[in-house]
Image (cartoon, rainbow, N blue to C red; front, side, top):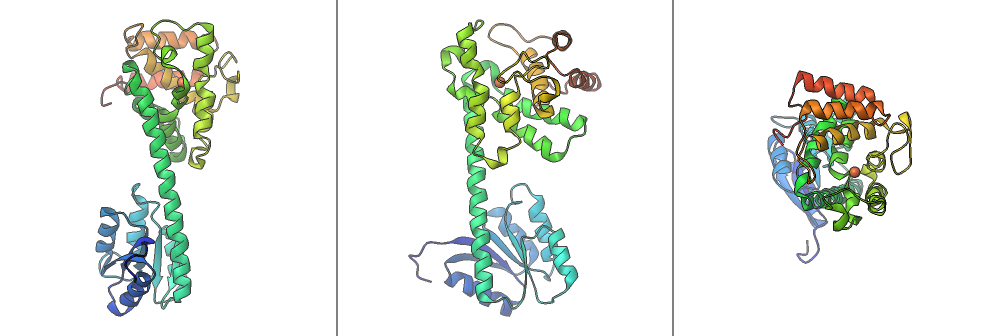
Length: 330
Ligand SMILES: [Fe+2]
């Protein structure tokens, strides 16, 4: 390989059989991949967890953990779950293909593998890994932006992380799926990201906003939705960003949705959002007690603002564990 050609990707090749491993390593190196060659499953797992890697090529039968169990372990870790894994086997058994699918492998190839086929698969999986990396970076940038907006106001610091955890607890309590909880976790962080477009004299005004200022502030829902819309992984987060200030009686914004027109996830987020803002210090008042906050929430629920079932679940959770949604542990 000529040393001035750019590296196309970093690949871990795991096979205890040197005569099978070395030709593979040689082929990949001569095609501009950096290769980490290892002899067993444990080394492959450690290599993938300790450094940036773009692809794992694992022999199924190895001393120690098999290719299947390494693949399962890689896919179970949040940090490596998008790392592509290709399993290689010398024996063509139908059940191995099934097991590789169950283990979450991205591909399954028989040895000896045709060179062109292997290179084509490697190329497309490394490209896929790069796309997921870019997506994760974009997501990280959005979270940094959301936190930097939050940090402008000393009274709301820590609010997003707390909201994330509280929204997930409430969603888990009513039995929503792990995917939905994950969307709620993200929306807790980014729901107010549109405040980036709100001038500071409005954002940080200590007193009540006048009508014009309120209109500017209300735009944070639609601006936030626009900022996050290009991210496909945020598809289910967008309704929470847009509709977390809607009210059951249609008096909220931006679309005056009513009752169940407001998605359940947006109602969950707003329930914990209101509770959190009532029980933390603000520039215009000190934190209210839990009992007073619930009193206000029930008053507003009777006025037709909030979802009574969710307020009741939140109240029940607080009775079970008074610190369920508090700042403790934040
Ligand atoms: Fe908001």
